[in-house]
Length: 446
Ligand SMILES: *Cc1c(COP(=O)(O)O)cnc(C)c1O
Image (tube, rainbow, N blue to C red; front, side, top):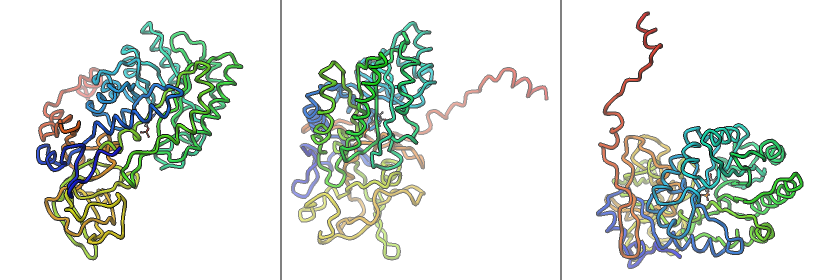
């Protein structure tokens, strides 16, 4: 389903014109569609129904509380990678027992916080981390479930920054170490090692890396059973793709078709499955709306200078990612026939679509066709921006963070207010002296 559509030459999100939202909420602003979020979640659940997984939405892909609430109401748990994300999940009303917590660098404070909240599972990434979780759980008189994040050494064929399941990356424990890990820690009473976790990268457009990783996991489950350790849960991570070219709903069934046949025999033996999708649910459920401040020509090059760039959406400059961009109101004859670069479209001119920051790397798209008529004051929609958009936004150049709006049918609400200049400086207004004790007096004596 696609809730972002042009009608009579104007872009709508569900039943609301984007222009009306931008007029009230201002730009830059992210707009999310509830119907799309729900549709993607429901289709994922239906595709994987034979193994009835707990679907833990990846908070880091888009952690707005409004988005989290929509998914919680649908029955989602949450995948968190920091104490801050667990706090978000809790603030959105998600039970900690329905949250799983991954990440190579969990601090003592974060571990204690998660245990106190009653975290469902820690996805543990190293021997030292396991010992730390066990130590903290013991000191709190708690017993917490732990899954070992394994690194199955498969190549997900994605950007090297987001490839996480190859041996040379920092994530998880390699398969040879995994058996020794269970032998060393598998009987701990305070950190109950009972699951396996993998997350091999993102986005992954072919099913083979999943198949390969799951085959290795199945073999490991059998090895561990021989060693006397019973696996109760397998978390397959996230990484399912989003369709950036067409900005349509992602093809989810193909992942299920590859994964379910391998997973079903384990499910039938009582192993519980977890999925951690982020991008595939939220990418095409969100757009970024920016305003053209100026156009200009330099040599042969035409520029559209917008009121936000890499500060609001980092992906094009950080990963070289493609996002389809088109005017919110291009006029009747300029509605895109298909949402991809279409060299055949008449009346278009190649532009660099850039932001206002003092960086050459500050762009949303390079060498991109836009209607020749694009002018100062026009609104542009950056599609497929829901995932890793706002969650990676920064305040570089002291840019206040964008507003976020959630559309539900014919209603729209601001689910994050645009930041003000005051919020930019609020933590700097009152310097507070540190009491340095001995160091301070040593300095005074000199
Ligand atoms: C980022 C992340 C995910 C989500 O990845 P998507 O590509 O957004 O589905 C899931 N699990 C872990 C451990 C992650 O770090």
